[in-house]
Length: 254
Image (cartoon, rainbow, N blue to C red):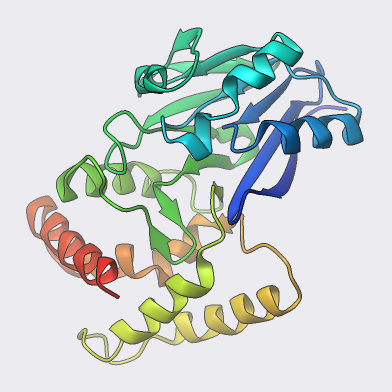
């Protein structure tokens, strides 16, 4: 079997864990380590080993399980240097690097903003990207360390991917993000936002059924995510970043 297998599962209170396996070689990785015990249980259920951990950033709900999983599986850990603040790291990755999971090649995206070293993993051949806490369905990450300019640059790097790319975000925040997006329609200058209305119905149905809203499709985010829609109405990077920062501050107080 060729291609990339992706197993999504809930972890902690609102995180998602992702186990990925290269079909050609059987090489397996965990994208982040929100909960070592949950990840080990899922690996056992699937009958998979664990060759690698691929961290997106240093926060404990993303790298807190590194040591326990390394002790148990002997896996090799890749990620941004900032991970060493709290957890072991064997190899440093930065934007522009590449990582090979067997025959599946990931381009490393610089996604700073949420943290200064945040990265993402994009496999163009599979039309998938793991974006951590940078972009969520109908939302984006808080600016804990970076600036609005940092995050807007990161969001532009995501938007440059194939529009059909499936974006694997690390949390189930979509209903809260949707409520904020709907509130903005009353204050922003888009007379109609029919794409959001259709997306809202889909999101509410998914959550009513207990289904994850992750992954989402990049084209849908560009069309309906307020952190992309409203800045893109402006002309030029500086104006777009300023508008993004304004929307982010509104969300912080929502």
